[in-house]
Amino acid sequence: MKKYSPFGLVTLILVFTFVNAFSQDTAELKKNVLEALNDGAGNASTVLLDDEGKSKCDYNMTEGKWYPYEPPWHTGQVIYALTEAYNITGNIDYLEAAKRAGDWWVSLEIKDHPKLKGMLNAIHGDYAGEVIVFATVSDGTAGLFKLYDITGDKKYADVPTRAGDWMLNNMCDLKEGVCYDNVDPKTGEVLKANSPFWPEKKNQTLYDVARPNNEGSLFLDMFKYTGNKKYKEAFITLCESLVENQGPEGLWMDFMPNHKTDGSFHPRFNLWYAESLLDGYELTGDKRYLEAAKKTALMYAKAQKKNGTIYYKNFINGEADRGSICGSSVAFSGILWIRLIEYGDGDEFADRVELSREWLLKNRYSPNHPDPNLAGAFINTRVRNKKGKIWIVNRDVGTSFAIRFLASYYRYKFGE
Image (tube, rainbow, N blue to C red; front, side, top):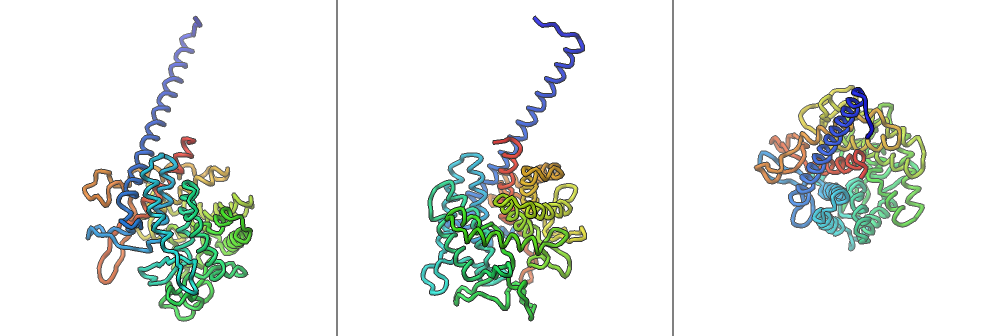
């Protein structure tokens, strides 16, 4: 039997104690992450989707009532989240809910309009009115392609591909590096002179009615699905436009819903563009895309407060309107930071990832919450004045993006 000196024995005991404690801490963290992910996915699959399969969107907490807000986009986010939850847990209930939502989404395909055949009837609603919005479709498609990857059911890829093809042919000005935002669902006319997003603005320019619109990396997914290089070229063209139009602060202040006049920026909009640039980096290896995405990531790190909170309305000068708490931005920023770390160019974000994880685990509704509409959901508040009334809502996107983050974090942290 091997003999150890008293000093060596003490060292071995200390090492064993440390390793055991570390193992227990890791196991506890893994348990907590999975628990939060399952609670959120349970809410998404049984509460957020209505009987048709579409997202209920905004929950008015003073009324105890749901209100629609751009349902095709919100439903797309729920689908994306549920496919991620299924990939981590293997829970078939999450996949079945995602399929139900996917079936509703593809049912929006326009088949009988002479101008809009193949397009999606993706009405924005709310303040934009009854118009079809490019980004409602493009950023709503990412979950559909993921659903296709899991199920092999081609309708989940065919429908967004046909819609994307219609948009490429009718809404994109690739010479200018932009795609028009809105279509009239009655006439099929692309709105090139005036946008309902700027009702008070009489003289509108190209950047008021069109944007790079690369959210969701739709054309990249279409290329991967079909092999058609024109979709790849369109995606890269929009990536180039993003690099060219990005400001020194890492944002795209020339485009709504950022507001250049007061220096305020949207809590997720810029992250979508950065996410598409990371997709572009994966496709091409072009470091400029990685560098541009990192600028955005750094700006959102500055926007995140010491306790992990990111508010809905933030300003370039570092200030924020604290009226609404945007949990989806905490989660989405974390997703971006994890990707940068995994690409070997984001070590400075490691603490931010943990801060976001800690914030999301703390700032969620108990699965035993007395209001079943909130049970298991994540906090994402929006306070607005609407028709002379104060609206205090919890938005579904807080839960959708939290699920995505927790799935990304699980793979990043535990290698599974």
